[in-house]
Image (cartoon, rainbow, N blue to C red; front, side, top):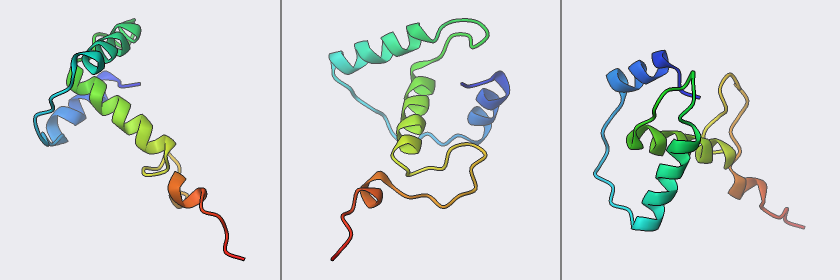
Length: 86
């Protein structure tokens, strides 16, 4: 969940990477994601913020980014699924 403070940090330290073009189905899904989370105390999320939240959640779930407050070593889902050699 993005708080007002974390949104401010994102604005001041965020990096605009590129323009993103998505097809209509993805755009509709993104808008549904925003609508589902448009409740107090969160407030309305922009599409850019939604893409950041979705990307961050996916990267954490796949092991490419550590969860907040988790100092343990990152193991990607790809590495975790590797079959040990006999």
